[in-house]
Length: 250
Image (cartoon, rainbow, N blue to C red; front, side, top):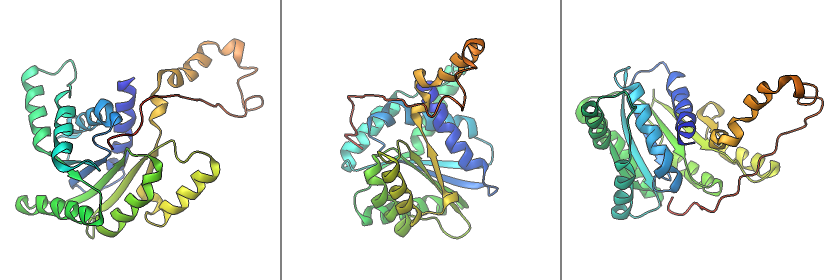
């Protein structure tokens, strides 16, 4: 399953990058960087993105962010980064080199107050100046519960947007709200801080094996199912995934 989740993440982030013509430095901020999903899948996805995009016109920095205090957060993030893996066909020496480079490009930030977002903004700008880098844009990946979206969006909009000429993208994980009405309300609230073209919505549950197999199962049984599995007989597909892991630590 982790491969599907990291692929889903990479596709979303690559979509953010490929939609932009401006080349330069890209800062990727993973919100909820000490959470369970980040530890198991998302850091691996960011590392894969780094491997895929290295040398293609963008330079990168990676910022893990959470409510966790700086010292503890840095320790948790370092532990998550220890488990990064390379493609099987990569030479061990090259893998070690790329992992070391990725670690050097990654740092942790506590984001709890408006001042914390201002500090993150200054840190990103400070990284650019010594190297004379041009900022292409910033990507914020929301691996946090939906109830936290609005406050984070407000702080990004007021304190952490890139300067003129650079783009902003936010990647929002679904489930998006808990029903149709709450999803509409959340969309309206986020729309007061971001333009529609700045928002990407991604559902990592599409990477679950049971979900991913729905269409192949239909294709493999097309003769038997075509008369029933169509828009005339299926109103919707409803999938319930029950989990015991909460959002603690994000």
